[in-house]
Length: 198
Ligand SMILES: C[S@@+](CC[C@H](N)C(=O)[O-])C[C@H]1O[C@@H](n2cnc3c(N)ncnc32)[C@H](O)[C@@H]1O
Image (cartoon, rainbow, N blue to C red; front, side, top):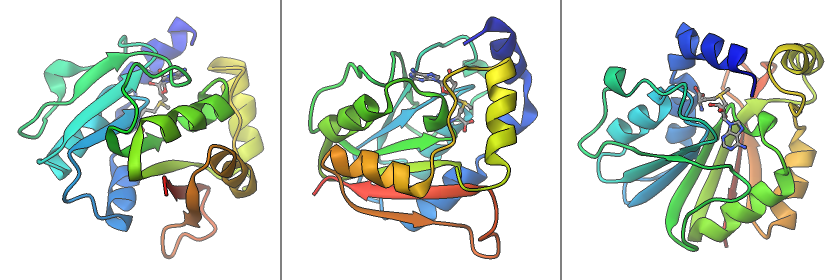
């Protein structure tokens, strides 16, 4: 990722928005989750939010760079998140350990998407869930979003359609794939995709 974007992203106030996390959390019951993975820590506000929303869980938040992290500004829950510098297609995590994996506005910029799903399927425990929120590849905003990302942020960016996400999840052996949209915003550009391991 170009360092220009890193500097821009690190200052972006809306990067602190946790609304996409809240909608995701409202769709699943993670009250007994012990270990929760996030891919794409960014500034760390999402991981901190997860650690407050799931105080019983240890949050592990992976990002390819820690340059954007703002540890001094994070209000964490009783267990502060553990931030790990790694790339999503090669997670340095043991198999069958995570109760849930969150990818909030992150999957669109990851390399090797099929390998990322294979890794998610590997590290999730049986019954664990993937929760992915991103730009709907069918939405009219998807192409302009990709153009801007390609020009300024990453040539890898791709806004996935629900069918593409379902194919990737199914190929990785995940089950019960479904898409949710925010009530009243069914035509919005955000989709939330869910799939489980068994
Ligand atoms: C748009 S930010 C989203 C951050 C956060 N989830 C949020 O919603 O505020 C995407 C993040 O994905 C990270 N990222 C990009 N490529 C990655 C990779 N290969 N492995 C892990 N993280 C990556 C970027 O560094 C960036 O922090």
